[in-house]
Image (cartoon, rainbow, N blue to C red; front, side, top):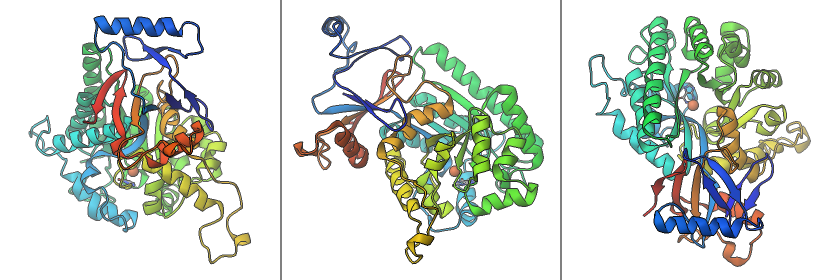
Length: 465
Ligand code: GUN
Ligand code: FE
């Protein structure tokens, strides 16, 4: 039984579905029991499995399937500090905690270019953890160091997670510490070009070796406007356009961040990013917590997408992103954990927080203010099923990739949920058995224990013992 959200706002349950794949791990055909061809196709598949064990994968009685999650925003070198110092303001947390940690991922010129010693074990642990939580596609910030960011890209390819990876650019000497910044805007742009070439080469080799390689893509990655010079921002925009590359950055995460763009350029964050050529299709901007209506219109018009990171927003935005309003304005939105601005590697936690935060926004947040003076009274609530869409097909749209739902032509990325694992019986104990209730229980109560297997591009990449 497969649950998915082919359209925003509703779900579909495919009961007893037979899903057949092509040689690249994409869905070729889905047959349901009502189809007269079903018995014959199932019989043929079982027969083929006799000759070739592993040809057919049949689920157990208490197992159901969700699409693999798409995490649109992770800072890989921050994995060791997940959960630490989440009571600090963003600027303090960046300067005192985050930059010293990320700087350790620098591989000195002439050092081991495989980056083995420090970066590789951390990156393998992170990618493996995300896979085990059901994240089959992930968009990563590496560090400012080009070589260790390549180590991250290779770790994703090695573990068969579909990934978009960027070498972070932060070149402004007025904004970044001497121990952690690009040597110059020219060096930052040259490193970005070299990084793109290296990742594309690794991806091409991997795809040539393996017909079910899930994909590896470089991203142009200005950290955010406050950390980059104008020369770097303009140059990165040009590189992104020339390569039709992914772009990732942060936009309107906090009032402080929005204020920096206004002060430096006399524009909103989105206007400034757009003027540098950094908002376009395949551009993913984290947060948008303080995005104004005019800025949302720039996102819609350029095709840029938003990575909604509700847990992180509570800590570093001190605010709730009006995700329903922005969605209704026609902006493409997916979900991100923002490790380690968000503490959790599981998008289940962000699905839950997305619903909670949207409800807090609906009636205003300060109970001391009389209710008629709170907020605009505009509906802001989203449902768990809408949040599931953001975590799956919304992410696929943001990346312009055929992923996130069970439909012909899309990659088979899935997580197999065991409804009967101890400590979290998700069956509703036989009381709540409608498909809608069942799906909501799965979204709210699934623990890592329940995620029995994870598949990417038609291949099992994780199994719980
Ligand atoms: N803005 C610039 N860099 C970062 C980062 O690493 N995390 C978060 N949450 N915001 C940022
Ligand atoms: Fe972030």
